Amino acid sequence: MRDSLQDLPGKDLPRARRSPSDQRAQIRRVGIVGTGSHAPEKILNNHDLSKIVDTSDEWITERTGMRERRIAGDEEATSDMAIAAARSALDQAGLDPSNVELIVVATATPDTLFPATACRVQQAIGANGAAGFDLAAACAGFVYALMTADAMIAAGHYRNALVIGAEKLSSITDYTDRNTCVLFGDGAGAVVLGSDSDGATLLDHILRIDGEGLDLIELPGGGSRIPASAESIANNQHFLKLEGPKVFRFAVKVIHDSVTELLERNGYTIDDLDLLIPHQANLRIIEAANARLGIAPERVAINVEKYGNTSAASIPILLDELCREKRLKKGQLICLVAFGAGLSWGASLLRW
Image 1 (cartoon, rainbow, N blue to C red):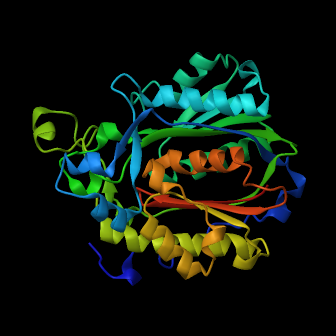
Image 2: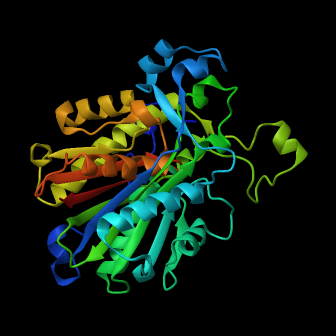
């Protein structure tokens, strides 16, 4: 496995075909018209973790910026959290569930491999005329789902969409491994997209993958390569595996590169950006990326201390929090950026 920054995934990859905002003039404008989120009631703080593994509040806080995370109950599945977040977003948008046309659920922890979690959401909320599917891009999943739904609405296939990021990461976390169990939490966030809306307008997106980093973040067991067996269970292959230092360097690089490219190709600089909303993986990653971008800390949204890393749910949870606290102002230029297993990464630019 490559160790140098120069050899990390994301270096010198060919750029995708450009689709800047001015090219969207001839297609339907798509905007965010509602946000919602859900966090489980149970709080697992750093002191609780210190009773489970050899760690401490100081050790965790210094290395991750996390102080607590939410943990779903035994009977609470990913779909249950997704449903709660969806209802909240629909209520804010003033959209009756029966009028929802598309449901996209970004998740690495679906209730089942099939049927899709989106089907469970559709049935529970009563979106009887909707299409839907799950999207697997791990921590980058919400940005991938956002661009997917945006494109489908902009092309005229649908008038609206419910886009959800939802995870029960506690179900795939090894609580004997202090290097990973301190990082992850559960939760869900959702947005409602509408065509020709007065809401926050989606301007442009960037998505990338690089399979050279396949083994840096992975869940080895449970698929067709390593089906569930007594051996796979004994080898702990159904728990999330993470190469922390290598992911750190990769993440800092792709946050910088994707945000910079997205701004430049739409005629902006980092000084024009009012707010950066990054995936809440680790405070040290966010701070290192901020320094490389040259963006002031007050223009970067952070809530990792309360929720930990909730993968595909982290950005929509934070977006909903900002919206409900009225910290988002009309006209602000905002960038969402995320990275995760695959290795995958992406960014979205919007005008609130």
